[in-house]
Length: 107
Image (cartoon, rainbow, N blue to C red):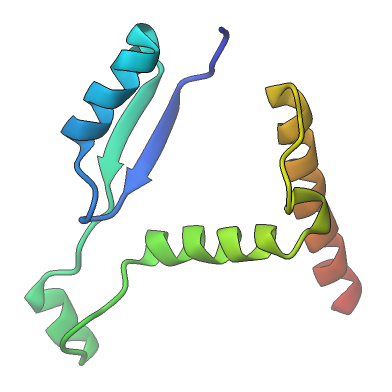
């Protein structure tokens, strides 16, 4: 398989060690292609500087959550019947192209 090198951003609830073990069971060479990175958690001093306390969302996480919600609105992605990764990737790209065109047309 020809998988490009990617970085997967995880929040504090995930354990990269467990994910690594499970992925290596399926595809042993995968860790040469994937790097796990934990999203930054705002410190108490950073929260105080912003004038906030309690739960403060990590910026990168909400970008990912919003992207997933936008993908869920594309009817073409509701069910995945694709046989190849390239077809699934193309449908995903078309979904985001449609979203960008709608935003450009509105401005």
